[in-house]
Length: 253
Image 1 (tube, rainbow, N blue to C red):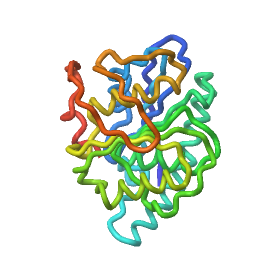
Image 2 (spheres, rainbow, N blue to C red):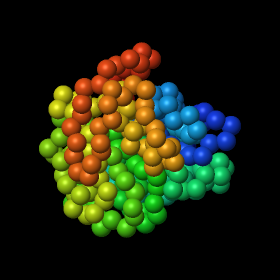
Image 3 (cartoon, rainbow, N blue to C red):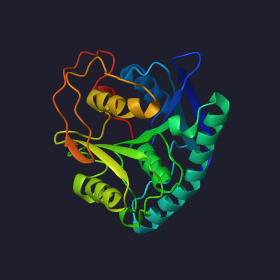
């Protein structure tokens, strides 16, 4: 169960018209994720909020890590409880920054991605968009029928060692599509358990129009790959940005 939450706010403008809430992975830091998101996406009029949860045993986690069937049930119960916190965070963001819900996006990496997707699939209220980096559903066969119009972007690598491609990712994607969610996917046949700079670029292209940016073009995008319903393959993109690399993210959980 969650005992405490740390928040890190990065505001690129005096008055933001949108917000991206970044949920930390297990043992990760929401502040680092939010800072990298702000720098990489170049969404200048958006506030980025990093969220790091602490359990009663002072571990950074949204839910207990499942190693067995019994622990799987405990993890699902933890997700259900943590969902209330995420909704409170969204509501507080709307009130504090005077930003409407339809201009708030939710992102997460690993366990934070699990939390982001769970919050989306268990809500009847729309968000600007949701980005799920290297995440999964703990119970893909129990995803409820879609009751919102939120667009979901899944980014995942075929060599993810934490959430296996066939065991976790494919069932999640298929379940989302079957249950009627507006699901998009950027899949990397060589990708591992990480958030790459390419993932950040595609996230920026995905989120920008949904956050109210018109004619947005990321300066590092060689060409804009249309994001269509279902699955799109990643293109090769030149890496001109020096501050962030795959190495920065590969150990995030």
